Length: 275
Image (cartoon, rainbow, N blue to C red; front, side, top):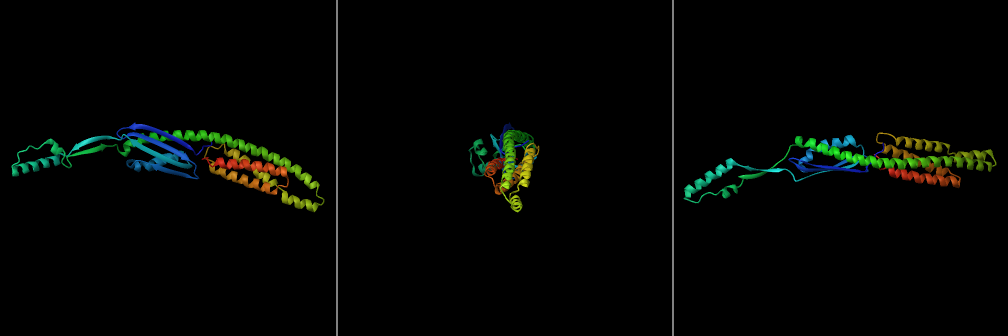
């Protein structure tokens, strides 16, 4: 099954006490597997775990994984009772020493530095990871489904191009034989015929190109990632087509080879997006 390298997947869920977690993963063309993360500071230490999940499913492409948190966490108000007790003792001592009769208000006490503090309640990494992993796997499923859908479209397109090449090659082979017979008939000496055949013999190029077309079609049905192989095969097809064009002595053959080269260029352009 051919997979495209272009895709997008996302999942989101409210996870207490963290808040609403959003996971987005998008992928694009790349020669190898490259993963870029955009994570909240308190989740950075989970990067290796997330990376392993992505690497297990995707072998090639540039991935951008964005995880965001909103409405984050609950807050707890903490009273430093020991510090409050010390403040009270100091205030009483000041009142007794200087004869101050004013009462100490609660408003004064709670506004003293360090008496009250606001703490955010957060889950630990071990608490958040199972739920976060589920979101990541869900986003990956969405992304892979899109890559598979686009891959099927690419597969159909490339099959058509390969079939065009196969048919075009047969037309070139037929026309070449006919043109060769006519050309040899017009040559007077065996020596000249031998020299002409040496310079214009394309039997090896025709066979190699036929092999590459069959190999290309077969690789399209492979289950493992084949993007790099398809790109290499397309390069080899282009090499053989160029040689055919260079050796051609017939305008009709040259025209057919040009059409084949155009199809090969289209193939090379599209295989760049295959995993």
